[in-house]
Image (cartoon, rainbow, N blue to C red; front, side, top):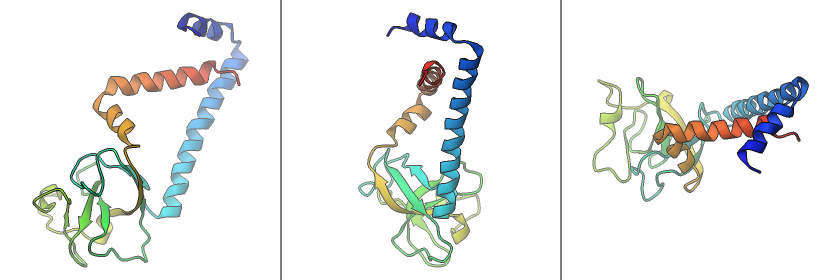
Length: 172
C-alpha cells in the first residue's frame, strides 16, 4: 500500500468513521496512562519502569537496559542494592548502587568517584525520600528506542506521526 492510497482512504472516510478512529486513539492513550498509574500503585514507585541512560552501571546494566522498580515503604534500602534516586533540581532519575546506611551515598559501578557531584548543591547524602525505587529486574537494551527518540527529536516526531496516522486510517 503506497502513501497516495493511504490519503485516499482518509478522504473516503465520513465524519462518523473519522470521529470513531479519533475516539479509538484517545482510548489507547488513556489506557496506557491507566496502566502506568496502576503500576505506580502496585510497585509503590513514582516511576516503576526506567531506562538506563549512561554506562555508569556497567557491567551490571548497560545503556538502554529497561529496569523494573519497586519502592515499598516497609522495606529498608540495603547496602549494595541498586537504587534509582531523584535529586532536587534534576528531572532525570539516576541508577546507582547504595554504599551507606540511614543517610547513604551512591556510586556507579563503572565510576571512579561517588555521586556527590550529581546531588543537589550542598547535599552530601541521600535519604529514603530521595529513592524512586530499587531495581528488581531488567530487560537488556529494550530502552534503546527511548534513547534514540530523546537524542533525535525528528525521529521521535516521525514515529509518533506515523503511529497517529496509522490509528486514524486503520478501520478495524
